[in-house]
Image 1 (cartoon, rainbow, N blue to C red):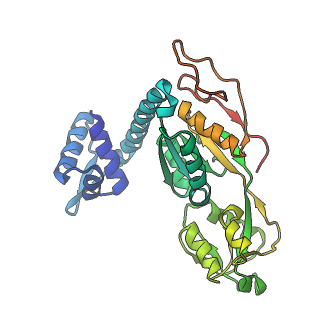
Image 2 (cartoon, rainbow, N blue to C red):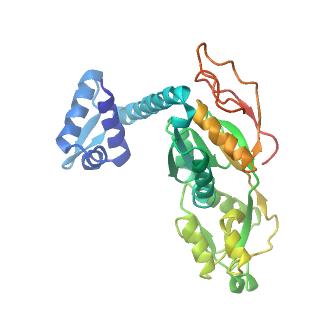
Length: 324
């Protein structure tokens, strides 16, 4: 059982086709089929079955792909941890953010971090909330910027930042706002903001028209274009509010207070600690953490003071103070 075969299985599960897996891995379609056949023979269970002119995962293949993805995530995490222990400034930092944070918070944060730590290799994935937490569970990211982590996710909140959700609209829409006729602009399925909009409307016992636009940027642009109103982060529309293209609509129970959370995965190494220190320096509120574990025997001293977020590769709980 080789790492390449596991990666082929995960690629097939992610793309849903041999052609898609081959394109993702930059190999031939016959190589994908051969890898799946070899892996199935080794396990003694069928992992794929023919469908039309291609292949799809069997029930056993779907289950095994979940384990394979976590194994590969741990391998990548371990490789990054080894480099970070040698020199945090040459480590690799895998970040993920929900769409609003990715579009409006992360660019400035990353630019400033890069100025102070130019040799840290950065990677950022921006996705809806459901996908972001899935990346954490699969050990595919080191730190996430999102809302509060859902129960069951093995991760630790290391910093928070205030965030307000406001109802916003173009001035003409706000002036004519009506619960029964003004459309509400919604994000795609899987977005935490969409879930909050649906919950908010339900709490107000109203069922206004809804228009799904599919992304945070499209929702904001739609609001500016007078398509309706939107429940959005104030951080996402600060400039539009200041120049008058959008205004807040006073509605019961708003603004909603939904702090941003910086959430580290089960292993939080030295390069991650550098980014957390950067968040604290940028005004993010530190969360209470337990005292750090002692460095492993022979381990190098940290290059700068601050909370150590690794304990020889083992994370520890973080208590969240306040916030919804």
